[in-house]
Image: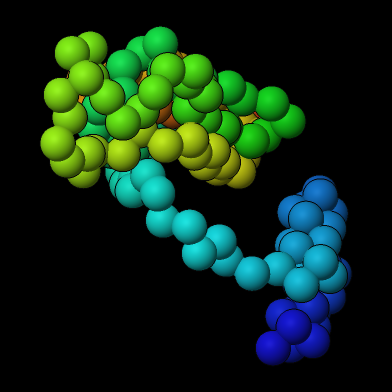
Length: 148
């Protein structure tokens, strides 16, 4: 399937202008024996909230704002838990009988387009919501041309 996917990219190159970075990114993914990650923690949703607006919702029960870092660098949005030095098997009183809510370390990354801007993040009721917006420049918006 890898050769077929590369063949499709090579067929699309002559039909597009300015997408070399996109094609190179996909080719490098296939060259490095790209496989989808099998780790599914923490679970997340990607939701379209408007024409050019998106939210990434990450389920983080038991975490608070101080436990999480959200960063963007070179088109990659990263959500990562901070490591904790305290003993995870005990609460403040040392009376934990069963620990079913995990606060383990995680790092989840999302590739975002160059024209997508991260507007902010909010943690509420165990759900981290990262809001993003695709910025469409005036030159790419619909423009009606008057015929003379």
